[in-house]
Figure 1: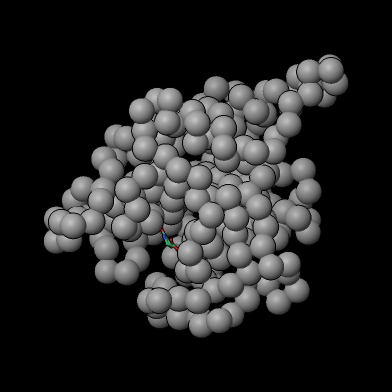
Figure 2: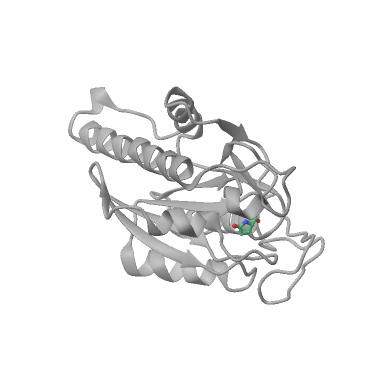
Length: 220
Ligand code: PCA
């Protein structure tokens, strides 16, 4: 199976984005999964086309996007993307939508289709602070979470998608010491474990096709 893993470029005056740092450090395979790594611009208009092209070119089974969530202390596995873009700051193109839908013709929300609860449980068992999150905000990360769900619901019903937010890196909080952070090592371990869960799910589904009695659900 193939998993497309995306990370965002730095935004909002930061010089790094921990999501891109850890995506770059991933190996080429985890378990049975081949990993395709992609840098995505923190841009409302350019992010989804970049991901859409990668989906067309590489035909992944799962799309897992990763983003920075400054102010959060734990790895947040996002459960839901909403049809709203309402930016508090401009994106990397200087664009700042207010009260805009992500997709004019889309439903109010989509649930992520990766096994969110299982990922959180696996991270917590490994001693990594992790939570199920019910809001990815209304900036570019939610735009990508909702937008990829909309794309696959419309065109690729057999693909799965999900989104993980990670905290600031410690170095990003030197000038904002009241903000929580997580080491790159821990954030990378979290992402690798999440991908391990997805790889195991993929294998379960393949076995299930051969032997329907062993069918495993891909849903949370
Ligand atoms: N975090 C932003 C967009 C890019 C990123 O890494 C967000 O949470 O919307």
